[in-house]
Picture 1 (cartoon, rainbow, N blue to C red):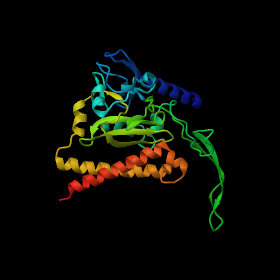
Picture 2 (cartoon, rainbow, N blue to C red; picture 1 turned 90 degrees about the vertical axis):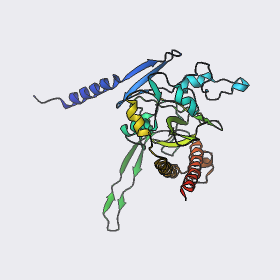
Picture 3 (cartoon, rainbow, N blue to C red; picture 1 turned 45 degrees about the vertical axis):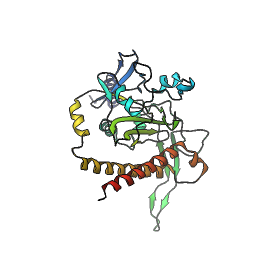
Picture 4 (cartoon, helix red, strand yellow; picture 1 turned 60 degrees about the vertical axis):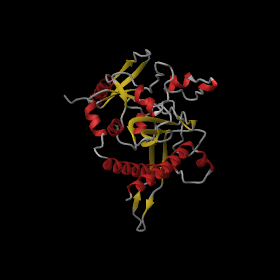
Length: 319
C-alpha cells in the first residue's frame, strides 16, 4: 500500500507546529505582577514583549512621549510598546532570573533565524509597523507581496538568456519565531520614530559614552547593529539567565590594546553596514521624499557618528 504523501506532509506540518507551540510560555514579573509572553528560540528563552517596568520608585524609564516636568504622561505607549530606558537603567531593569540581552546573545538569535539580511522579516511583529510599499508602484496602497512581468532577454547571437515570465516577490513580515519585535522608537535629542523603528539595547558598552544596540526598520527585512550614546532611551528585551560564565568569557577583552583594536574593527564594520544600508534604501538621492524619510535620516546620522568615532579611535592609535 503506497503512503499518502499529502497526508504525511500535513501530519509533519501539524507536528512541527505543535512542537513549536510548546516553546511559547509566559512569565509574571513578581515586582509589579505584569505578565509577559515568552518564547524559546534555539537554546535561548526570550521575553516576547518589550519590558515595561518603572522601578520601585516609579521613575525608571519613560513611555514614548512622556514629559514629566510638564505633567505629560503617555501610558498607552508603554502598554503597547514597552518602556524606553537609558543604558544604565536598561542594565538593571530586568527581573531576577532574567537579564538585559548581550550583543552576543542578540548575534546568536540573528544567526539562528538566518542572518542580518533577513532577521527583521522573521522577528518583527505582524502588526504595529508602518506599512511600506515594497513594489514602489503606489504610496496609496502599500503592499509587501506582488508580482512583476519580466521581459525576454536575448543576447547578440539570438539566444534566449532569460525567458519571459512572472516573478513573485514576498517581503511580508512573518514573525515565524514569535519574537514579535515592535517599533517603540526612541528618545535621542527628542522622541522620534515610533511605529517605524525598533531599537534594542544590549548589555555591552563600546566605550565610556556609547553602548551597542540592534535596530529594525519599517520597510526593511534587515536588522543592524551599532552603538549610540548611553543617555538615549531605547527598548529592552530581557533574556532568561543561562550559563552566565560562558557568556561573560566571550564579552571580556583581555588587554587594553586588544580592546582598542576590536573597537576600530567594530566601527569599520558598522560603517560598512550603514553605508550599504544607505545605498540599498537610496538615501544618497536628493529627492524631497528621501530627504524626509525618517529611516534615511537616522541611517545617515548614525553613519556620520560612526565615521567621527573611527577618526577618534585611529587618532588614539597613532604614536
